[in-house]
Image (tube, rainbow, N blue to C red; front, side, top):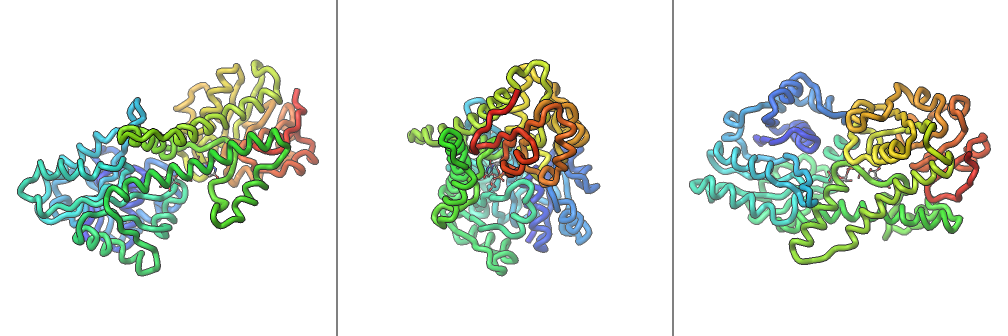
Amino acid sequence: MRVVVVGTGHVGLLTAATLASLDHDVVGLDEDEEKIGQLEHGVTPFYEPGLLDLMEDGSSSGHLRFEVEPAGAVPKADILFICVGTPARASGEANLASVERSARSLARHLSGPVVVVEKSTVPAGTADRLWNVLRRERQDLVDEIEVVSNPEFLREGQGVEDSLRPSRILVGARSVRGFEAMRRLYEPLTSEGIRLIETDIATAELAKHACNAFLALKVSYANALARLCERAGADVTAVADVMGSDPRIGRAYLDAGLGYGGYCFPKDLQAFERLAARLGYDFPLIREVARINDEAVHATVEKVKDALWNLEDKRVALLGLSFKPRTDDVRFSPALALARRLLDEGATVVGYDPEAGANAKSEVPDLGVAASAYDAIDGAHCMVVCTEWDEFRLLELERAKGLLAHPIVVDARNLFDPADMRARGFVYYGMGRAVEHGGL
Ligand code: UGA
């Protein structure tokens, strides 16, 4: 099929590259000329394992191209994906101005039957708005335009895997024509056993927010348990294992630590809560999830202070600055929230991240960024593990201990074994694990 993907951010690029790998003819559109120029030369604006290979395959097979102007590809497209950003307004509501703008600009170039797919995460009711805009712009094509919701469930850092082997594909449509187009588009995946779930449009839109909010709720539940375990002398990882052994609960997203971040959970949770309020339903559970998440950073600051007493004249090393491993994304990263809090308390903060150092530095200019974990640790009074990159699991602990001014580790992602760390002579603080006060 001939596909146009509008917006070349995370979701847009992965959608374009994946559909090209399924032998569709895909054009990625973006008004940012510089970005398109870079994409044409195989440069992506962010780090995503495996994406470059997928893009290279797409351009060498001729299935994937990038353009700035919609006039060439849009009139010929069978399917148009809208993958533009939906940032948060000050109120927490999703700002849908880019979605509307894209729809208007695309509408001008439509020439015949087309399915417009809303893939950006949007509040329930957006497809109706989209449909109104398209209909008003092109009254001549009212019977030819179909609007479909096809929310994305991919995780950053595992985006390629999640796109090629998704847990499910969700399609919300209002007519057989919409469903049929999407069945054809995803046939290469459904023929391999991937499930395609068909619903009405509002259900698909709401289900996307419901999934992200529920996953965030699990993380906050684990973090609230961590606070309780610390007080009760229990171990939150073992509690999560017990809970996870019940298939009705599942182990995923029960890792306590520094909390969730990124451009999806914090923003989507707010937007979901705002949508509920607009629809006349108070949803305090969602607000509580966000509050518990903030508590995780606060609890970590308290551990650092417990270990180091006063933070003035102290150097703290942060291992990991991205919001999670395998990405250079620092948006709403709890590691940076922690860095800001420690800097406010007067500490010198030096961080290291395998991919996100430069992004972190531009977000928090007062943060020192080291070239390696050992450089960050060298002379630090305490080291805090903020992101569970594999590289940190392989840290030479004896060398780290020798470099630290004090052998104090705050393991905010429960990466290390507490007994092993203590046997090696570290003063070890975990999250939701029995606390040992042995600092300064
Ligand atoms: C999330 C969802 O998982 C995707 O399904 C969804 O498509 C995406 O948002 C989106 O809406 O675009 P992502 O933001 O890439 O994906 O990140 P996750 O891997 O889900 O992790 C989110 C945060 O939760 C991270 O900060 C991670 O460190 C944290 N987390 C996760 C925990 O603190 N504990 C856990 O047990 C699991």
